[in-house]
Image 1 (cartoon, rainbow, N blue to C red):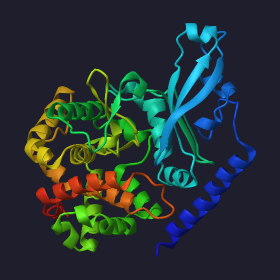
Image 2 (image 1 turned 135 degrees about the vertical axis):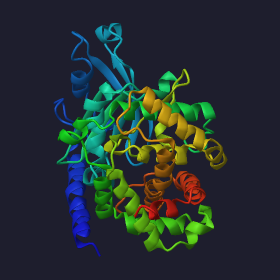
Image 3 (image 1 turned 90 degrees about the vertical axis):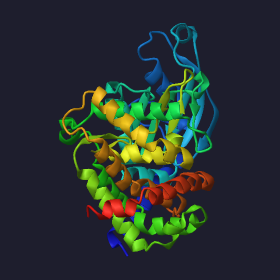
Length: 398
């Protein structure tokens, strides 16, 4: 029993549970723009005026309507905003999308794993510098003491953007667009001294995994996930010694300390991708860490592509990835084609465990994804691990 982890989780229940209860009892609804609202439903007109109308003299919000939404790891709501004549004349945004952390379990996970704060930092400081298709936040705020997180975007779906899930058949052209976007933000941050020197940036990938192991806990929930996903797992994974699988996972994570270091998204599953109205690939839900380039590359291809497409395209896509890095100006530490292939084979463990712990969630974890989404990802990832013989690939460098 990990007593430190048990205490950490127990104290989180008290801390964030009492905060959520207090907000409900007091109907917490701040008017001060320096305060973070608890949810879309608790955004006051005064607060939103200060956020949306501050640079438009005479503009005022006249109404706020919640028009739809869904719940997962976080709470997602669509808002329709009405303005007076000055606001309408200025063309202020009327269709908004709000992402917030409302549940105790979500706040606990977001805070203990730093996911909530890192996403807010991405939209506040990193997004404006990246030459990629990704959302731009109108507002992003995080309050560490309460776990409140709230991010406001323009409603991209209302503008024709289509968000993906495993049922979407990613075409070869779309897969190439994903590769190009990935290489775009990685080449822009390749071995950047700022990633390690700035205290405003979150943790390394490896350190984040150590946090997950302690806070969730990853190994135990992963074992539960293996049982729950057995029907879609290849026989080789159902038969494998689980202690060995965990050791290989941790060895693969240790390799993420290798240079070259880049900005990483960290949660590259297909559900975080979208297609704009004009057909461009985009990436949202940034959990932002920094570490080795291979982590995002592997996770993306394993989740996005159908098994037969991955088998047919992966070599060409990895070659394209390297070419795009070179086109983006990467020279120091540019991996060879053989190195890209080798590290790709070694980094299948992180995405697999991410989804094993999702379907294997305990009572203190939020319901992050429906089981059918988890199973679709795990079927692809498990088969890729066997196809690529990731076990031997990582064992030869341990």
